[in-house]
Structures are given as structure tokens and as C-alpha cells.
Length: 522
Image (tube, rainbow, N blue to C red; front, side, top):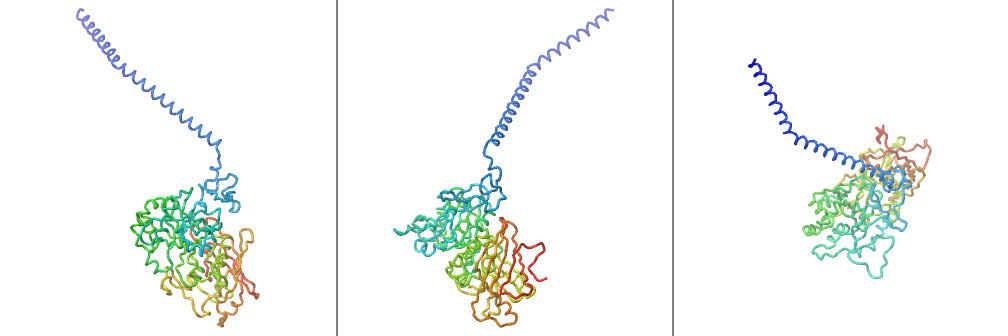
């Protein structure tokens, strides 16, 4: 029995020791359990605070949207921010870009418009009186912005015309070399330093450059002005491109520099010009400075330097499938419409352009299958009738009515040409713009009248019926906005049948080409 009791006492003692050790273990973890409870409570309070701040911010944002001016949210792509006018409203219903005080109504958002462009025109006191009419043809006081930069202040007593571009006098850097080239090259930098508001593009040109501003806006609107962009065209004469550069925008045809690039160029301009003081022209120097910044030329074929001699007719009668942006060197070529002066011709072309800017000088051609005639139209400028069938690849090739700029030779040019023959029977019958009328619903009628440089008519068989045509009437719908932002395609046309009746005119209807359409004889 005593052994049994000893055994029980032993186990009871052992259990008491184990129980005591467990209690001691619990006491060991108590401080850590308290810390865990505190940490969990802190995290929960922090989460509630963050959630509360997010809810408060969301409420304030909704409150702002509900009670602030919401017009800017309704039409983010409209050029003017007015809640009453939807994005789809036609141009004639858009608000004016001129304020009541006659100053430009500058838009700082939406699509690019004329108020986003600052022109820098290179001129001089000596040349301006003779050339200012070119600028006055396209300058729109109260809408366009910019200056003609002169070499010195105009003579005392000279009154600056209100219809002319305002002038500024270029800074005198006092450097050696061709000062005029350096001065004009610095127009970009001096224009940037004026710090004009909401500028997207700086456009350079000469005092005898004629801009088609609606098309200029259309072209520049394709590009992002926040990118580094240098936009322009090259020379028509190979000898000029070889002498200067194939990759350079020729300044007389005009070129555009995006505002972001212009700011960088302005800071580097003075030092850069010193390195290229031996270059002849201002445009060549600007191109060299842009090359240092790694920016190539973005070519747009509607910028025309017109490095040609003689008659530019052939080039303009077969204009590239691109918007007409500019013309230059018009003092050195024959009047574009031979019945009057050069200014008469330009005024006529610009009047037509205002009715349908995008279609200006756009070529289309079709065939009179009954009489086997080829008809080519350069809208707002000229029409041609060939009393024979000429294929499309020949019709789109300019007639060589001009010579090279420097050497007065028949070639080479930076585009293909076909010869203009001294034999009247080898050339088309020519018709020049007489008038353009708006017929309503976006339709125009342009009339082109026969022009005879040689009073002697061709006596070859087949020419007589064509020579009886005294005028060509062309009907066309206005090209829609943004059409040039799509893949370019020449429009088609149809020669309207007169059911065999004798007439001294023909009618042509221009239209968009259908799927599978081609201007060829089927």
C-alpha cells in the first residue's frame, strides 16, 4: 500500500509542476499579445481615415462637376468652346475668330485654327513697297497674327497701310557675313521671344509669298505641335536642290516650325548661325541648325517655291494630290492667267479658293467616250481638252511650259514632265477660269473660257469639233473638312452627255470616286 500511495503522490506532484510551467508560459506571451492587439487597432483606424479622405475627395469632385462651367466637357475637339454649338455644326455656323475689337479671338484648345499660327515674313524697306500686295492678298486683319520683319524703320512720313501685315524691325547683331540672310534666319527666334499666347506653329515666308491660309491650317492640323516638326517643300529645280539641299524647306515657299521645336531652336540659334555664316540663304542656315537638333523635314508638296522660269502653267495644271498651301517667285513667271496681270490672276484664283479651299487647283480628269476626248480640270484655275485619248499617267504629268531656275534649261526638275510642243496640233486646247458661283447646298459651278495663244487653229482631222467648244462648265460639291487627313485620292469626274446636240460648251461633274472607279476607258 505504501508503494501505491508513493506512486500516486509522485504523479500528483508531477501534474502540479506541469500546470505551473504552463501558467508561467502564458505569462511570458502576455506582453506580446498586448502589442499585437494595439497594432491591429492602429491599422484599422488608419484604414478608416484613408477611406474617409477618399470619400470626401470623391464628393468634392462630383460637386465641382455639378456646379462648374461644363462647356469644356461637351465638345473637347471643337475649335471654340461654346456650349450652344455642337462639334458637327458646319463652318458657317461656327463663331467668328475675330473679337468685337478687331483682334483675333485666340483659341487655346481644340483643333488647330488660324489663331494658333504666327507668321514671320522676311522683308526690307526697299522691297516692301513693291511686294506688299502679295501679302495683302492673303493677310486677314483681325484674324491672322504675325509681322513682316524689316531691316530698318520705314521712312518718316510713310503711312503703314491698315490692310498690311504689321511690321517689326529686326535686331542688329552686328555680325559679319550676309546680314540679310542672318537677319531673316533669326526671325524664328525673334518671333518666339515675343511670347505671344497660344502659339502652335511659327510659319516663315518671304514678302512675295502667297499663302492659302485655310489649306495651311488643314495641313498643320495633321501634326502634333508638341512634337518637333519642320514642315515645308523642296525646290522644283534639281540644280537648286543640289546647290542647297534636297532635305531643306525652301523659304520662299514657306515652312512651318512647331512651337515646341521653335523654343529649342530660339535658344540655340545665335551660336548655330555663327557656325553656318558661310551659307548663302537664311533657309539653308535654319535647316542646318535643325539638323543639329536631329529634326528632318516633313515634306508637304503643296508648298511651292516655284524655282521656275517662263510659264508655271504646266505645274499648276497638274497639281499634286495635296492641298495648295503657297506660291512664290511670281514676279519671275508669266501671269498665271494670261488675260490680265499677275495680281489679277491671283485675285481670281483666291476668290475661287474661298468657296472651296481644299479643292483649289486639284486636278481631275475623265473622258468623253462619244468623241474620244480627254478632259482635265485643275479646279479654280484651268481646263484642258485633248481631242484624243491620253492615259491617266500622262495626264497627271505636268506639261513642260517652264525652264529651270538658274540655267534656263528644259530640265532636270524634281518631278517628271512631258514636253510642250511648238506645234499647236500636239497640245491641248486651253481654258482659263472665268468665274465661280456658289449654287447652294455646298455645290459650286466654275466656268473656264477658251484661250488662244496662237490665232491659227489646228487643221488636223478631229480638232474642229473640239475647237468649237468655247467654255467648260464644272460642277462640284465642296470638299469636306478633314478630307486631307485621310489617305489622299484624286477625285473622279464625268463629262455630261448633250445627246448629240451641237453646243459650244461642255459640262463636267466632279465627284468622289466609287469603289473600283478608275478614270479610264472601259
